[in-house]
Image (cartoon, rainbow over all chains, first blue to last red; front, side, top):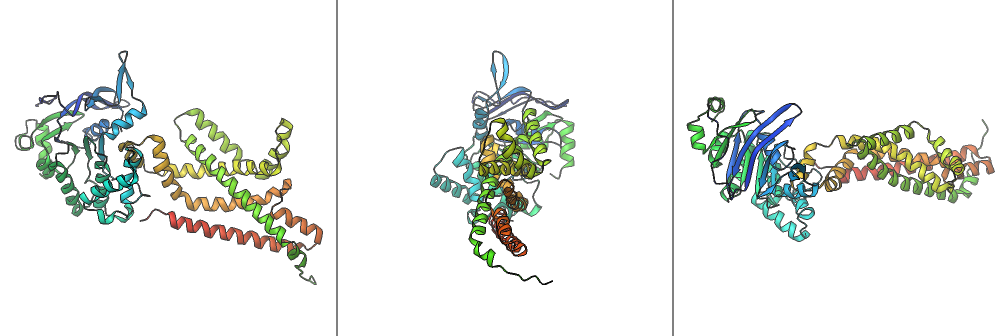
Length: 265
Length: 220
């Protein structure tokens, strides 16, 4: 088994630096010392079988999950916790909220606010978190809705949109906040096959624009095309990572080879 | 049966019946508004991580829901002065109905809050909203829309409960109806008209709430 625990990239200017991340639910340890480094503009995709810790890792980065050990630095700021007299102390809710706004997240189930229109879904964070003036927020929201091809649906409620359209609004909602890092958590898993393409093409467009992205996906072809680095996770650890071509064509770890064999790539 | 219906006495005092109906509606409106605030706070308390809050809210709901409203009205109006708290009959009734409404609405709101997918909170957190902002802009608006049909039933029921204010001589519709009845002896006419007024008022409230339900419903 080849175990590549840490990126060998220069970490001095890393956008995201994860060191020794441990996460457990009661007795169950789901992340067992994960190290990962991302540079600005990188697209990193986490792959692996269900339960390997991909989604949990993603959710730790924006503190939707608490973690018990290790540290996450985003733009040099320690996410979730800091040290006081050698003790690990959770940041205040205000600091955590500010850190969360540094990342954007698109969820598997879209999670659009059902009582708000597509436009209002995008403007809510701009108004209440970024404190933009309403006109400014609307202009920005329209720009991003146009970018995801849904400006014409700006006044539709989520229930009036298809799954693919809802996911695109959710992406616009996250991107409009100008996050340093976008997190995508299996954003196509809940979609009918014919709707997957429209969402993936939006993500591909963002990658081409240089957006830094950390993705979890089961779409191997897409991961291959869009990623700078593929990270294979197995049982709470990073088993192998590297450029897509290397990983997909010359997997070092038998588990990765087995995993790739079981996918449709 | 030789009874001859004669509504003259009722029509003569019809304006007092309307005034009583108006007061009943006002009492219901104010009490429901206060009850909604109590219910919302108690629902959050019931779902809180803090045991003390959960227990306090649970005791409040259990005590109020298991006490007949007439007993509550009499307790607050007649017993509190014994403890040095003297309230006028209208404020006393408003407090009673608000507490009563709050207990029932707590359960409605609690159910509504539990039905909200946790992904909505997470989506709010992910864009940097704080917990109170999530409650104010996401959780409560979605929950209220979901529970509107149940709220309508409660509102109508609470409006009808204003008739019990007559027990402490609050001059609402039932109070005036009893007065007309006693003074005119036109029992059937008085209570027929009173019933018709209650039915009409409840029907109008139901129509208004149904309109609101349709207006505010989450579009699908």
